[in-house]
Length: 328
Ligand code: SAM
Ligand code: SF4
Image 1 (cartoon, rainbow, N blue to C red):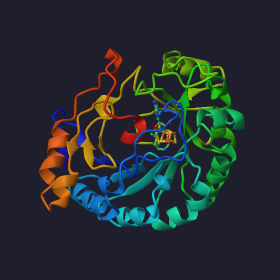
Image 2 (image 1 turned 60 degrees about the vertical axis):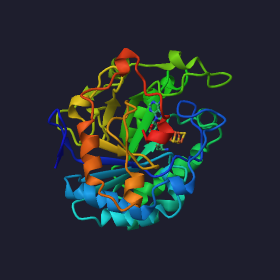
Image 3 (image 1 turned 135 degrees about the vertical axis):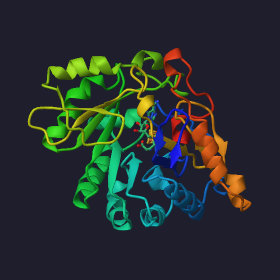
Image 4 (image 1 turned 180 degrees about the vertical axis):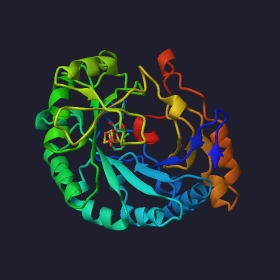
């Protein structure tokens, strides 16, 4: 079992399978895009499977695939099959923008994927196209329908709430927990390499921050109540609306960090173990792996380097990578 210096058990590995994406959300990457890693610099599926096997032998039970956009990497179901078949792995899930979900939901479910989190910041097609710089809302909605059909449940929707951009849709997004039974999680925007202007019609990035306590106050008017029997293991505190099957969660990295409960380790697409989303500390494992070396000591090192808490509140945002490269 991996246990860090502060007694936290590390049971969750979040793997970024690519730094590529088929859209460019304004809060995640610049309009011109970012230099992408070459195929050679990216972990191969066999290498990821080997890392997962080792991690599972040391207590990792949950794996989430992310990116970039994980569904743009070729043959992702092959990787899911390998991970889902690894002894000790109890849960394989995926965070996606949903654009390719319609095409792939069946194949993903058949490969052993249990559930999906879909990032969706608006239900307005024009606004969706503006925030994502060209994405199609309808494709995501079709993808969500098919994810339901193929049992990728429970569906969780992640909305990054931005003041003056989409905050007026909080109530309608929350209603999806009633009308569709989906879990809806509201996320505070993090100041990770996204502070240069987003383009015409957008507020200045620093003005878009919308703190969770304010979101909660606002949704109380729609009947928001705290729930005691939490269904998820994640960092979100859970709430619900009257008559809803789905839960409402708030992910509060900036105003109320959840570091004391953090059970995560991240693996970047280019083979670095990252102990904390918000810290630039990384332990490279790709070269050792390719040279046939032992990567267990590197895992142990990454676990021991896990900081007690991140420093976002002191305006210490990570500078080395943007969210697309870390995996969110
Ligand atoms: N492409 C996939 C997606 O969008 O779901 C997976 C990768 S994306 C980096 C993972 C999550 O990070 C998404 O839910 C996205 O909304 C969130 N995210 C990206 N940049 C963010 C930021 N600056 N602040 C808060 N959340 C952010
Ligand atoms: Fe791509 Fe996800 Fe970043 Fe949007 S949030 S640009 S979908 S990686």
